[in-house]
Length: 179
Image (cartoon, rainbow, N blue to C red; front, side, top):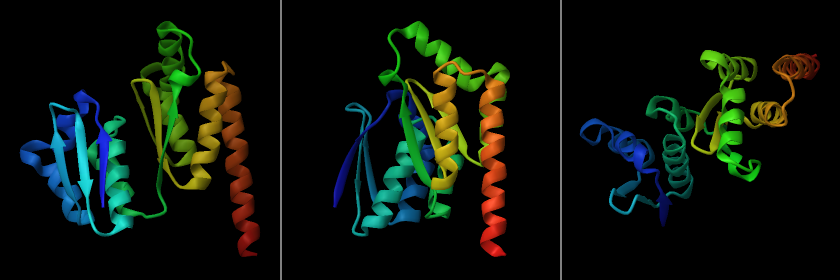
């Protein structure tokens, strides 16, 4: 089975890695073959095992959305982890608005993004017109809602309070599950 992916030109070198190391590691860990055409800006991924092929595609997409290879490889270590992408171009009217929204999600010195990650145990990358999230499904849902709240202009304090409430609910659910 073959799958072709469009790559961001600025991420091709990261995907290949020093001396081809990143590409090779993805191929070895997933049993796939990856052909990168830097002129066309595409990656063709082939493999027999559909699950492993889809995992390789997720890792490539994560790298393509701004994650480092190291952060992307967590998708191979835990089959329950997912990559979710929010397309900001669907909610903006002009480039200045995109910068403002990205700035709200990142925060001063990256503090807002860091707090979103810490509170939800997810990995977040803001790259181009997208926000990419790596996490478990039950972690992605609240952080996605929080990011949507930031996009709508809701104050950071209110967004972090929302996440704190969700974290307490999740803890309570887990305790009641075991007792």
